[in-house]
Image 1 (cartoon, rainbow, N blue to C red):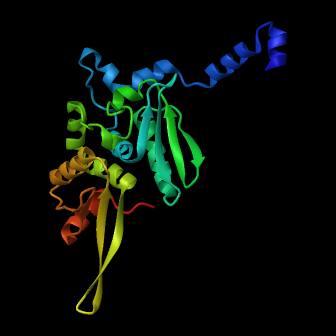
Image 2 (cartoon, rainbow, N blue to C red):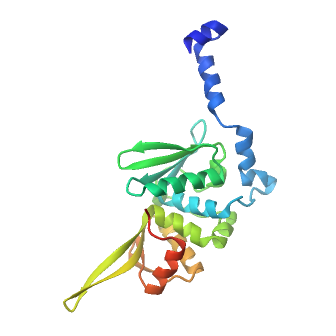
Image 3 (cartoon, one colour):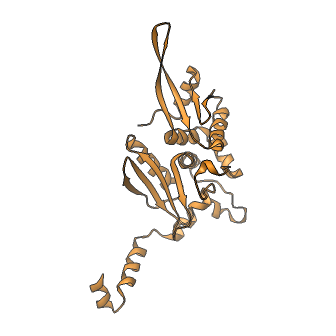
Amino acid sequence: MASIGRALGVPRGTVTYWCRQAATPDRRVTADRCFRCRAGSTGNGSPDDPAAYAYLLGLYLGDGYLVPSARVPVLRIACADAYPRLVDLCERAMLAVLANRVQRVRKEGYVAVQSYGKHWPCLLPQHGPGPKHLRPIVLAEWQRRVVADRPGDFLRGLFHSDGCRIDNRVRRAGREYSYPRYLFTNRSADILGLCRWALDLLGIAWRMNRPDSLSVARRDAVAALDRHVGPKS
């Protein structure tokens, strides 16, 4: 950088800035991909890929956070090392919704899948200071329409982030039984409510097994949720 700067007669910092700008995706293209901004004064619009948006929204509400105060806002979603396929699914959803480029940052026990983009705050208005369970989480009307049309994809994102599918083992009358069961755990009462709403839209029975956790355990309900979510891998 220093040698290039001397040859061109400009400060080293200027050369560094030029290089960073060259590596940054076209901002105009990113703005064009923001379906809310494309809608103009209404600010609503519809995502180009509603299934990808509903899935990404579920991931974000579970294990994601958005930093809008950075020079360029950044969306980060934590994906546990135990589920490598989840990293690929998360990256694909980001690219389908808005991102031109996605980064994978290795952390202890998980991978932070992240994307810088000026328009992420437009698409995820639930961002705010502090943990999600300490502030209201309410979907905008345009988000509710997307989820109502794609509840299975939304549930897939929720269960891939803060949910699991397990073999539940019980012992009765001296015999041990095993059956599949879904669990979704979140400390936010609002996010739990959104999960229940999406399950109701699909007619999938659920019950609260703890104040911060719901269970889907009936055989027909598990089979129905399998069609939309399936086990993480």
